[in-house]
Length: 224
Length: 384
Image (cartoon, rainbow over all chains, first blue to last red; front, side, top):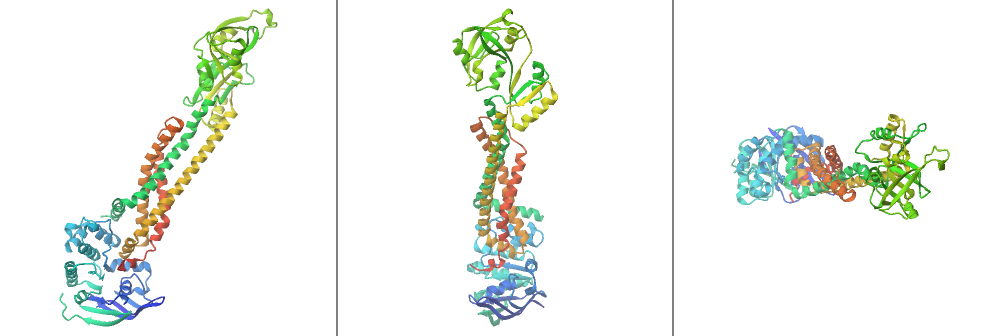
């Protein structure tokens, strides 16, 4: 059953066509990678799927709701309730501890629960570092806090933008292992990356170039 | 955990863990609150402070006998003056004037209470000593020059009763006084001979009769008018009058001074608002990514407004609390250096300063916080 259906979307900025008639379907529990060089439309695609932008034309059905037609307020609610975001720059609130950063996502979603947030950090192997500020954590640790924050509200879809872009190989493997674990648990993952190794970890890879979907690769050797 | 607990945890963490930036804003609010609290304290204390200063310029209220009465008595003056709050009554000097003769030349003798005269007319300059008992006299500078008298000399005053048909046929009453001091005022008092009321009674043979009582009362014109009305109603034998040249000039100076303090207070509040607003603008600007992140995590515009306003209002509260204490110290310092006296702490000023600081900070934050809601959540996905 499809969780996300992108139907013929285009995004046009003055003097630039960022996306040109792109279609994509992502099933529940699927792990999809979106690859492409700079300027290929990856970020625009992420923004639209992540309910932070709307296409100029086309439909984007997320769990059956056409998010292209929703108001900004509804998009905020959909993003809060259904999507978990993981960023290349981690984007942790620098004056909040690791556990507080996780609780911020709970705060906007429902009720903050420190015990549950601690469990989420434990799941990414950071229970011991829960009371540390982001400045006291390594890049890999910060990204794992970001993962814990993205998962805390049990989203239907996890969107990761270059999740390993700022990590060394060791931490990259830790994050990919976490993604594999999430996939095994049935989480739907869409990972935007320019790193072929990260893309190869996914079940399917979509390649964008100049705003067009130019290739779709099924990973025959996918191991969850 | 309740949402409110997390809310306070977030805004307190923002203030405590981002000290350097927030200290600038806190400093602005605290300085503003300090000046506000200090100036308002001075604003309300100025009438009392200036009243005390003005009292060195002499009496500002006079009691005379009612039109249908023959004169004042000590009892009437005491009853009338009892209607004035003791803390406001700086001095009271009863006077009885009679014409006497010294070396056959007429001089006005004024019987008074010397301590009261000193209190109501602190600007009188005496060469020698003030009389300290009966049989002693203070003479005006003109009298001193006319009779070549000075401290330590004696003089003999003669009194001829007014009711005598032919004064030359009546035996005058004589009394001798020791001159203790010479009075220099620059006014008509220099032509008088000042003796005690007891000596005046002995000299004239008439006891307990006063012509006028001069009072030095602390307070502005409205307060003096209130006292005058109460005395006129409570002791009808006494007619209270305000010395308008003193009370009106006091009133004018006080009003101008209070207007000046008020103006400075308003300007300080405006400057505080500008400073806080600028700081909050900078805070919002440097936290654009954080705002974008919060929105990406599902924060509504109202949540963003609540969080930034919460920080601003908490700053306002803390600044107001600090400012009310520092403001009192500031007002005390000004009072001691300018007016040479202390002020009392007004408890109501503490909550008032905190509330005003919160309001001013809230107003200052409105525009920056509104701009925070314009931040695009997609900002955080840009990988720079």
